[in-house]
Image (cartoon, rainbow, N blue to C red):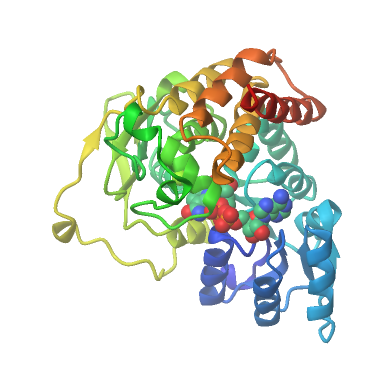
Length: 384
Ligand code: NAD
Ligand code: MG
């Protein structure tokens, strides 16, 4: 019963975090911890509305301001990585929603697993960097990793009909992002503002740029590989402009199942929180006659090389995911600051993958070191 669930939301002030709160308030579930990087004003409002035990701002100055803002309440305020880890492992929580962006989600996800909490996983970068470590830890602790990402939720929903049959193939759908149909030449001069204008979804800045480069689909390929234990060769990507078919699975006999719905993250968020139950959801209902056409295209590997790079990293399994992700995070940040061009993002990621030696079975320390090395490689290469 979701009404009895106590939920800790890491990254409560972001796109997924705020939609999680929307779902939670509708369902009457309880938030026991809320975290932000530095959005004090919103976290204060959320904390006053939801009365969690713990509110965290990772940024030290923001945490000070949050402490002052919540001084008249009983809510405990903490800061930094320690605060985030505390929110992840709070004994009162039944479930942790990982909605922080980037590699910053890795340690808290591991802490939540160690504390025995089921995870509603939005933070795909965690699996890209350290999928092996995370899935092993979850298996050891008997913890469920429930996908929030719409494609992975779609696959998870389809798998409910598999009755133990193995998947022959996963087909991930990709919207194609704001630059679908553009050539490499046309992409050279695109600006951050253009890259942030996604046609179907309203999301945080980093994932919006990832959608524009199609690195998001590359990260999702690696996410699917770990979640569903399939080699990258059995994970296909198809561009589907309308974002109505959220992804598909194929069985040995060629039968294909899909999950369809309007593009709205509240449904996959809610399913992760209520699984296996289904409740009414505010998401607008699908009207196929109104949608009219569903279109599908092969991805353009020429204009969007990021997918190929991710496939290459996925094939190496090991530490290449951490390199791909770290380099991509660093390059996207530089692009958003106006320091590099759009096409420099995959170029710098490729260079990092070429330069940093592979590691077969990386430990957590190895993953952290590979992430640092990848970020440094991008900063060095940018200057050339
Ligand atoms: P966002 O930028 O809107 O929000 C990120 C949240 O994390 C904010 O609360 C922010 O304060 C916090 N945060 C940022 N950096 C942090 C740090 N270094 N330490 C601690 N907290 C930090 O991002 P989003 O769009 O909500 O995406 C969150 C995650 O969910 C990403 O991994 C993204 O890939 C994934 N995801 C998002 C969507 C979507 O529709 N937005 C869909 C699928 C998956
Ligand atoms: Mg997705």
